[in-house]
Image 1 (cartoon, rainbow, N blue to C red):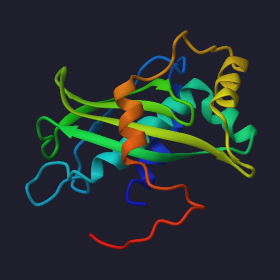
Image 2 (spheres, rainbow, N blue to C red):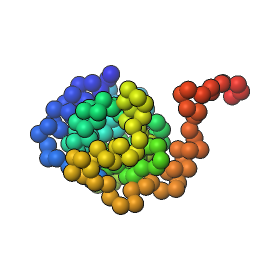
Image 3 (tube, rainbow, N blue to C red):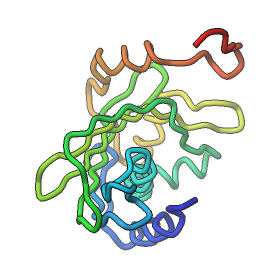
Length: 185
């Protein structure tokens, strides 16, 4: 909720920005605000995922995926995330978030986010996501068909690397309809 005003601003700006293909990188420029930083005066590690939401909203709105998903009654959800930090983004620093769909596996689509300051990568994250409707998750085939209908057929060999597939598979929790007891920790 703490980025709700930024979310609204990003969605309003997306209407005026150039359209993009879902397969190219989207870029937004932000500044590290007081609500983003912790007592060390750099963006808090947990805040990055909220900021990455903004990048995904921009990419989905500008590529037409948002509109296509809404027509079908789908909404995006994150299934898994991983992040790597290289340098800190300090208070009031201007930075870009680059967001790109990088591929699919049998269940999820994958997005890479990069936080860039002065042309240098500071943070990188991978997000595995799904589109969920009233009848459950949309299949990858349905999602790629939606993109193709909007004039953007998927690139050939649009599967993610085996490393990313293994990461999601190896760290996944059981499906929500299966038990996941907390026995020992």
